[in-house]
Image 1 (cartoon, helix red, strand yellow):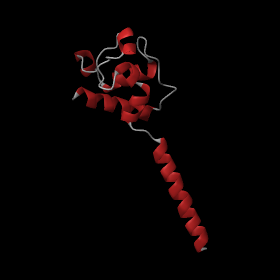
Image 2 (tube, one colour; image 1 turned 135 degrees about the horizontal axis):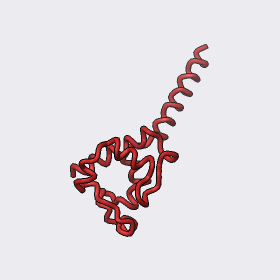
Image 3 (cartoon, helix red, strand yellow; image 1 turned 60 degrees about the horizontal axis):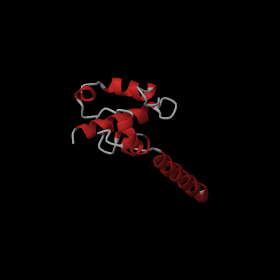
Length: 106
């Protein structure tokens, strides 16, 4: 009985640690999906960003946009930016928008 309980505890711990590794933060998702166009600082100052005329996250139009607007733009795409509705979960998109807000404060 003790071996079975120990086995169940070990399996539970492994499952929990695997799930935490699978979940990425908004910053991690931004770095892997957004940074190449929007730049590390959100300025859009990259070759791809310049060619697509990416607007800086610190521009008044983005700063004044609601989180819901930014979530919708991320989900549905905007201009040359692809839609991420089928690539990221709603929670991941919210995390990215929260991370974008931190870039605006720097």
